Length: 58
Image (cartoon, rainbow, N blue to C red):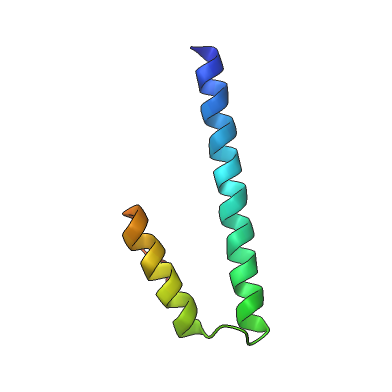
């Protein structure tokens, strides 16, 4: 059972890292003028719909 808990914690940490990395990438794309705030919001809304989450505001 302890191994399963460690695996779950490891997977959770990896997901948090990937989420933070994606957030930084999206911010840099907005700052560079590659994507607009409304385009980023559309992406956020689509992801939230697919995952069943609540979209963050861009």
